[in-house]
Structures are given as structure tokens and as C-alpha cells.
Image 1 (tube, helix red, strand yellow):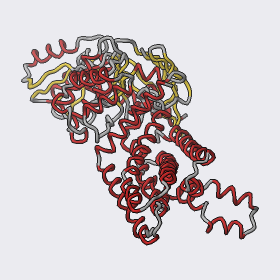
Image 2 (tube, one colour):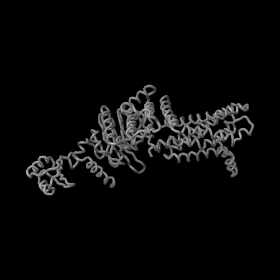
Image 3 (tube, chains in turn green, yellow):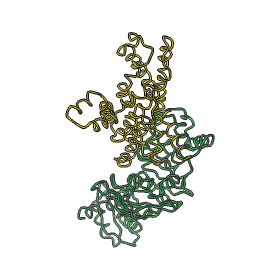
Image 4 (cartoon, chains in turn red, yellow):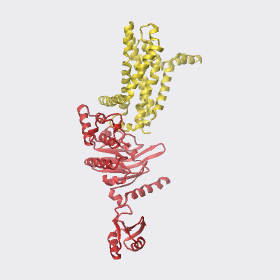
Length: 311
Length: 249
């Protein structure tokens, strides 16, 4: 469990993290979203004890990061941004080093290292130097060191950044499999990832918390939520008919498609279907939009900007 | 205390492994022993002097260390910061002092190994004559202590920057200052401008060479040992403070 209380971090005049307060419970996978430079990594560095906060604090599983840093670090498994590793070491020795640094000794350290390697399918590269591994394998080594001591709290800074789609899928599977009985915080700027992986999403912009919701809740904020998009042979004629529907708030024609935005609490799709049948249009595509996360993200993070400029 | 030693030992062990996993160790040992031998036999006139001692060998150690120790030390923290592994290391349940001392000891032990590999020259002088082996042993210890002092300076300078070349140059300059302050060249010029003898003695006293020379004459004076302990302690403490301030830059 993570309880952040008005976390703030300054770098000289720059306020990187500006009074962020939140709680993450066990079993939650929190997606930490925000534009580059919004303060995601800084927040994670504070939570993991790498950077002290300028003010505020956080309690992790009952330990305060400000005065019990070592205890906090024992509770946490952390994958820093870019998954930095000691390239000159081979995989198994590196994992054994991490095990010993985590207080396991002798045979137990070796067992923990082997088990972590096993969980991330690193068996074939155990004796290989880390710097010779592919990016996907390196990331797995980074994850292996993070979960080696079976931590209750996992903090992963952009775990899928720079991986190919297959590797991304693999890493997401791994994280999902670990999510039970754990508190996981994942930072990312890949929006689908939040939808695929997290049961909660927080957006920060300019160091401030600007949204805290479920991924579904965020998507519902999109103006595209429950909109209907279709393409027909005569776009302009169809658009003018659709715009007269009482259920339609707005109609946009773009890229050979018509998007009809709904009035609140109406069944737009049914109405559109009725119109199509009445006019006997030839419909090439027809779909109900769930909402667009990237649009919500843009709106929320842009709203935050002018406030900052005015302050 | 036990926990401190365990964490420190873990870091030290990793560092030592890293030396031998890269060419660093082999290049350093080969260059160090070759230069030590070359200085002894050519510049030092080991044979020509006709004396059974290792003075020509030890006399050049400060100058050998001046370049080789900063070369070994420059990676200690600069590399961790550049590659980002410092974030990995310092978010493990290891304190910064454990990491600093562990890294320092690994490098110091490694220097000890390089020094130990010059032992054939000790055998040689025993074969050729009848040297005072007590003096030679003391000089070896003095040389290793001096290497430790240089190393602590190098470690601290390595924490100042993430650029290893800058770290190297800074370390050489500071080490050079510590060496020079004991030379007559410097001390005489302080005397010449009329500074009191007490001040000049103070300058001489912070010099590594003065204390190294004292030990290599075969006298392991407690004051010299305390001097080296203080120098190493001072620079490693500075290292800790600098790292705390700059680790995230």
C-alpha cells in the first residue's frame, strides 16, 4: 500500500512534483500517465528512496520514506527508467548480486536469483553478459531483479518503452500475472497500455495530479464516447439528414467518414440504424465508438498548462 | 555493524568481479608492473647504484600512482551516474556509505594485488644482495596506503561529474597538489617569501610524499598511519556529501 502525502520536489527553481497526494491499495495496478517531463519519473524516484522529497512524504506499507528509507527499499521492487543494468556482468551473477544486496546469503541468494530468472524465462541466457542481450531480454533482467525478493510493492518506470509489440505484450502479461496481492505502479505514455493493464489511471501534468479514475472512466470522458461513425456513398446528404436527428448533438465529416456525437442519455446507435433503414443507404462501415483515450489525455493535460502559466 | 559489513561486502564483491570481467584489470596490472620495472631499472639505476635496497623502486611510486590511480578511480561513480545504474544501486537496501566504502575497498584491494605482483623485484634484490627486508615491507605498506589516499581523492572526484575524463583530470590535479606540497621546490619558495616555519611545516605535513618517505625509511610511525587514515576518511566523507547532493543530476 502506498500513501503519498503532498509530495513535492523542486530542482532549483523548477517544481518537478507539486503537492501530489494519492493512495494505492493492494491489488491495484495503477497506471501513471503524463506527458514527458510531467514528473512521473521524479515521483517514482521519490517513492523508491532515490530522491528525497523537498516537502511532503509517503508511507509505503507502513514505513515512511523520509525517515525509514532502508525499510521502504526492502518493501519495494523497482525498475528504473530505461532499465539500467551492469552490462559487464552475466545475468545470473547480476541477479545473485541483487539477491545478496537484498540480504539473502549463500545458497538462498543463489536460489532466489535462479527463481527470478526462471520466472522471466531467462534460463537460456544465464551465462551471457548483459550488454550482449537484446533489448527485450535486458528488460526481462530488469524485471527479474525487481521481483526477486517477492516485493509487496512494485514500481515500474516505463517497463515497455522501446520494446517491439510482441515484447510489450509479454511484459504486460508478466505484470498482470504479478498483480494479485501486490501494489503495482506502472508509468507509461502509451495509452493502450493503461487500458490493457491497469485498473486505475492517474494523469499528472506539470507536476500536478489532474485526473484519477478507472481507464473506463477516463474513456467515458471522451467526446467520442458512444458516438457513431459510419461511411456511406453520399456523405454530405447523409450528414445533413443525421444532423436533424434529435439524438444527435453534432455531426462531423472527416476522412470519408461521418461521426455523429450523441446528446446525453440517448440511444444514438438505434436512431442511426433507423435512419439508415429508412433511406436505404449503402453503408460501408458502421461502428459505435468507445471513446478515445488519447483525446482525453490531450484535453486533460492541456487544461493543466494555462493554469501553470498564470501561476 | 554486521549489516554494514554485509552490504559493503556485497558491493565490493560486485566491483571486483567487474574489474576482471572487463579489460580494466588486465590492462592496469600489465601497465603498472611494466612501468614500475622500467622506472626502477632505467630511471632509478637499480643496478648501477650497487646497493641492495628497493629505493629506486619505491621512489617512483607517487608518480606512477599520480596517473594510474585516477585512471582506476574515474569510473567509480561517474560511470554509475552516466549509465543510470546508480539508481539501481541506491534503491537497493544498501546505504550510500556502504556503497562508497565497498567500491573504495574493491579498488584498493585491486591496487594491493597489482602491488603484490611486483614482488619478484623483492626476490631479485634478495638474490643479488642482503637488503633490510623490514624496510622493504614497511615501504610496501606505505606505498599501498598512499595508493589508498590517491584512490579516495579519485573516488570523490568521480562523484563530482558524470564524465570520466573530467573526473580523471580533476583527480590528477588534486593528487598532484598533494604530492607537490612536500617537495623542497614548493617548500623553499614558501620560505623564500617569508612565511613562518610553522606554516611551511603545515604545508609539508599535508603532503603525501613526506609521510610516504617516512614510512619507506622503515619506520611505521603511528602519526603517519593516522595521517593516511585521516586523508582517506576526509575524501570519502566528501565523496558521500557530493554524491548525496548530485546523484540525480
